[in-house]
Image (tube, rainbow, N blue to C red):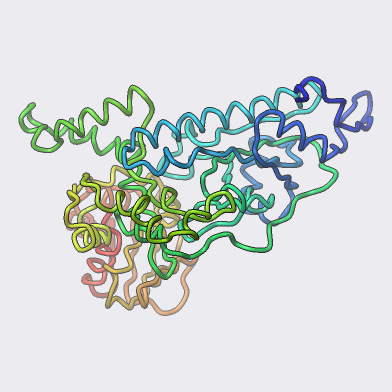
Length: 443
């Protein structure tokens, strides 16, 4: 095998003043560097590609020299991810995650030795958590991987590689040189739309029609991360004594939190990945014996007795009660306090509970004043939501609110009646529409 430091130079330079600057990289030699570093597949995307439009400003803001992105795939072992013993699955997730970061770091080291600027943002955690609950990741790896021809997004919102299926982790490397030839998206989606991810998901986050309930997934699967951890801390703080704490959090949950703090945070499910049979290396057993695949892979996840974490009044709570009555519903807080009106408006489509919105046909005009001044329209109709900048259409309810008072109201730190009396929040229209609005966003 070729060693990493055995590669001849992959970069052609141009002279700018008294300096040599990277001009263009030979794509095949760069590909080999990535494979020799341990990547299982690789693709290349220029920073000016339209697929990077919604990320470009932040990437350039952090690394203004970025000209191209390298997307890499590292394969995970399938059977550990499928295990009903989630300690086995989490060990694979974390080990593969460390390996993916190490591979990306090796690639950066080789490119630096060649005189190129390169950086590899984390493939997962750690992230820029000072921005939580806003966007905390530096690069969104999934759309970059799709643009680089490494797969397509399945209905479970994971990238499915045509060979390895969804049993992969992704990383992205930013470089300050152009690449001689770019990758392009594959022209088919490996997703079978078999709906096994729908059947396996314990909180109903993936619907048969392709709808995805982001809040349901985040609340359960990420119970011991971010907002879930915040909720647990607040339960500790609110407890009067040890007995009161144990009435809120059972011993197994306390020890699970200790395990996450000691040995990396654990995912509670990711059953959608476990059940997915797509990919050339994966699909054989499913095609040979579909019933056997269900019995061996999907049914043990469905039948597992376990706590399922839901927000009270959410679609997930209703789903678990009907679909998995043997699983134990644990009603918890969201643990996410929105820090800006911009974050509030951006979170609405992700937090929207469409079944809770049944029967609501309303247009809401928001006008925020004070520290943040902005206007927006929220339209809830036919169990869908649309958020538009400015005021459009005719409002059924107009809400004028001091931005900080509104955020305090959402965090249950401000009383609505007090805010209305003090005219910090003003309504024009039926107050019942505000109550209906709240039911759509129980988090």
